[in-house]
Amino acid sequence: MTDLPGENENVFSVAADILERDGWCQGANTDREGRHCLVGALRKAWEDELGWIWTSTILDSLSTRLELGGEWPSGWNDELGRTASEVISLLREAAAAPEASLRGSSWLVSGSWPWP
Image (tube, rainbow, N blue to C red; front, side, top):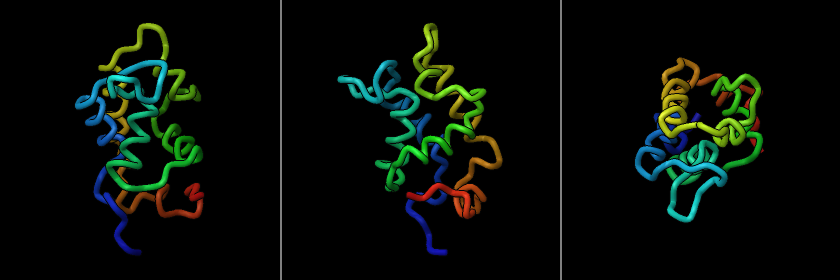
């Protein structure tokens, strides 16, 4: 297998870094001030930082690793009272999980990975 762009990166960790750098918002993937919601940060990490193509099936796959109890990430992000700290903590926890690493990850290289 050839090296993928950003193969050593962890999309959850990169997304958390983006939120810390750019800020967090609710109600939009990216607001006018350049802040991102959970989904916006994941997409920015995936496309801009890691250089990969984003699809809705990728969000489905990443969502299962966030352990939101079946709740859609945008709904979880936009819940009344949700804070930036909670979103960043969720991403850091997902990043720390052994299966979150992209290198050698079975969900990245297996036949079950949802390539478009």
